[in-house]
Amino acid sequence: MSPARPPGPDGPASALNVPGTGGPEHRVAALTLAVLLVVGGAMGLVNLAIDGVVRDGVMRWTYGATMVACLLAAVPLVVRPRVGRWQTFGLVLLGDLIYVVVALCIEDPVRYATPLMLLFSSFVAAWFLEPWMLVVNMVATPVAVWIALGGSYPDVLSLAVQVGVHAGMLDLASAAVFLLRRRVERLLAATEALSQRDPLTGLANRRHLVDQAPRTWRQARREGVRVAAMVLDLDHFKQVNDVHGHAAGDAVLRAVATALSDTVRPSDLLARIGGEELVVLGLVGDPSEASRLAERLRSAVADSRSAHGHAVTASIGVALTSPVDGEDATDALWRLVDRADAAMYEAKEAGRDRVADFRPPRPRGTPAAEHLPSGQGGAARGRLDPPTVPGSAGARPSPRDPA
Image (cartoon, rainbow, N blue to C red; front, side):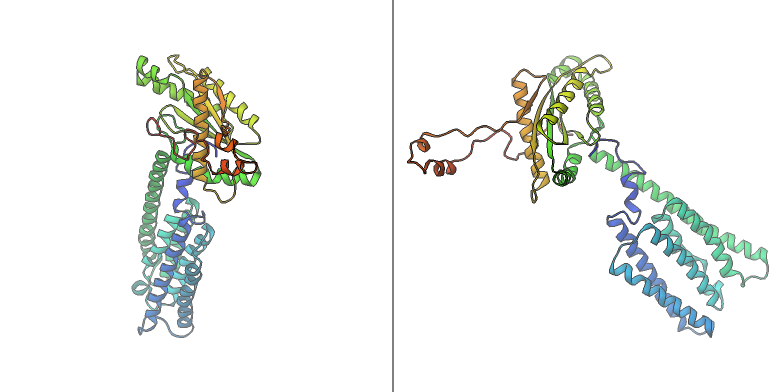
């Protein structure tokens, strides 16, 4: 729940194409490997029906068993489409070994067991594996080609040239795919950062706040604590823009964001949801803990200064909730923020630069209920609509400008 650094190339986005990360990526890897195994095994079995392709005797049985093993290896990947990084690495090296076995069982490997068969292993390694695993496969590729083509050329020099050409092209293609993958990961990371962070302050934005709500609610239920929302609105911020210009206002927002980031706890989430409105979401044990944190935030804003010495204060509203099983975390989040927003306006009305806690209004009695016979007043009051609180009906706070 920390507002810390946005995802980078080695962060969440870099796991998008690495199997075993718990998302759809490992299913894609598993199904891709399954398709390659089925296609390779089926194409290999066709050679058994062509005279003069596969050697007779033990080699023929070995070749057939290898192709059947390819088909069988695809079954668990289809039934349970999950594959980890190490499993993928093992299947890639198994692909290299299968090519060697096939080449040794073929009458003419140059014609019927071309090294292009290793293209599948090379591309899978480049797209799904870690860099060091890719390097291992790039070293294994020329070794596999050397063994497979060893008996097809009259001298070592001719063999070395062919191995260099075939293995070199395979490794070059593999490296190109790996570089493309890294480029895609960086673009995805940049896109993720833009969608989750406020570009002006670098804080989390409304979308990130919503995305983190389910995890926050689960943690609060698991630990038996409350969720606290603190809504901060900068006092007289419009005057800064009107008197000193929008560039000065932006500088003040960045200074405030820096001061708040240095003040919140590592587990708290600090987000900008409007023009000069920010939210801190965190877990607390009791209301006094939330009030102390809100007071520290208020002091941090008051003490912050932009590079040109401009400063503002903040009015802060605090609201707490105890998450319950079955409730929608996003709806509960905005109800909580609405209550904190209502408390923030109370702080504004009380003079600004202060903290106010949300207090539900007390139900007011009605004359009709008071004059009913004993035992009926409560029932009548129960049928009356409860008093409403501005912003407490679950409506989302409308930002002054998009986060």
